Structures are given as C-alpha cells and as structure tokens.
Length: 305
Image (cartoon, rainbow, N blue to C red; front, top):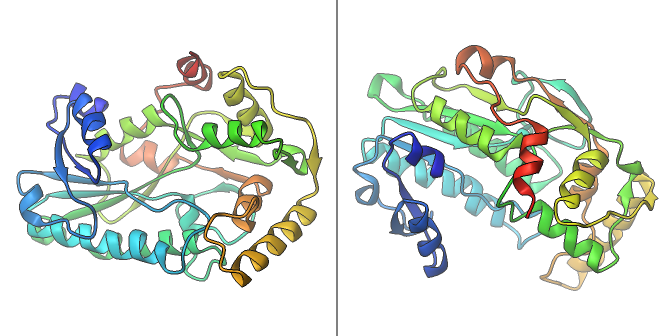
C-alpha cells in the first residue's frame, strides 16, 4: 500500500475487521469492509487494477478451507473485478503452485502446476493460478498476470519471524537436515516494486517469479532474521526422514481425534525446511523490467528495532 501511495496511486483495500480498518487507513488506503465471500463489483468499480493477495496460507486447517478461500475466493475476485471494469488483475501466487515435495534448483516458469500435489495449500495455489490465467481476456480489456514471490520477508513480517520466536521460546525448534536447504527469497519491498511494474508491464496471462538478487541456505536466512530480534536459534538438528515420519504421526493422530489446532509439526512444514528451492527471475527482468531494489543486508537492517 505504501509503495502504491508513494507512486501516486489511490488504493482501495478490502478489510474484514475493525482492527485492520485502522491499520489500512493509517497507510493511506480507502477501506471497503468485505471479504472474498461477499465482494461486490460495486465496491471496486472505481478501480483500474486489482491486486489479489488474500489467501489461506496455513499448512493445517479444516477440510476444504484451502479450496474455499484460495480457489473459490480467487474465482469470485476475478468475477467481481471483471464486472467492475477492472483493466488488469494481478494475482500474487507463489512457487507453491508447482510443488509436490521435490527439490527445485534454478527452476523457472515452465514447470507444470502441481494439481495433484500431496499438500492442499500447494494444490489450491495451482488451481487458483489456473483460474487467473484462464480468465485473461485482453480482447475484452481484462488482463490477468501472476506474480510468484518465494519466502516473503522483511519489516512488518507477521508470519515467519513470530513463528520462529514462538518455537524457540517453547523449546520446540530444531533444524531439519541442518538447515542446509538452499532457497530463493523475496523481500516485501521488492515484491511491492514488482506489483508497481505489473500495473502496466508484463505479458497478460503469464506468470513471473519475483526474487531477491541473493540466494541463501535456510539456516543462514532464518538465523539472520532471528538475530534482528536478538534471538539465537538452537543448533540441534534432526534428519529429514525422521522429521517427516514424526509429522506424519502427528497428522494421523490429529485427524483421528478431530483436533482443530495445528499439530506441532506438519509434513508441509518439513517439506519447506528440507527441500531446496532456488528459482530464476530472468522472465521478470526481461518482461517487467524488474530488478530487486533491496539487498539482503539492507532488508535485514530494516528489520532491526
């Protein structure tokens, strides 16, 4: 929102709660109280572009929640945007749309979508992305474009860093395979810059990986992030095969007894921590003119208290 406002764009933001109303308004957005279940075209009929980044990202949840929010919700957003006369629909996806527990090294946008992934979140992102790309209709003045960040991080993170600190405080943190999996990352300001570019540039109906210039191991990246809060991550580690077996056991028990809270470890979390995932950003550079503006060192400095 801040990047859009700095660029002179007026921003209308969806909000489901009073608490987020104030947060969004404080960043210069006009708030529309709705969610993906009740979004109407009349609420966004002054908008030229629609940036869709709402999703259920948790690895554990009630059956059907990923399809309801990530797939059906995306289809509803597409319908509302099209009826409202929106010119360009920018969908924030992720590499998860192509993932089924495999290593990815220097992957690019040619990889197939993972419609049969064993992970419901990944499946839902694949089907959502297919819906977005299928809705592309330049001849009707409705263009869609997909941006795929990987491991979004930076100042204001409400997901990765809080979870890390919570696990350390509860003495439940351990590396998997020593944290040596290599990963691409995306600083939130680099993603914001890509969104600004995608308002006007990029081939309609295509997907683009949006990445930082540097790659890292999971251990180096998470250690550096935790250090910005004065937290030292433990050195203990467990083998990936053992972590996966433990996670499978937890999930079986949780399902058998209908436990609603997430288990201490899930197979999805194990996959994220143990599998290499490095990606190429050549297409974004060529078509969008994208170049990351925030380095790893600058991003970490921005997270310091």
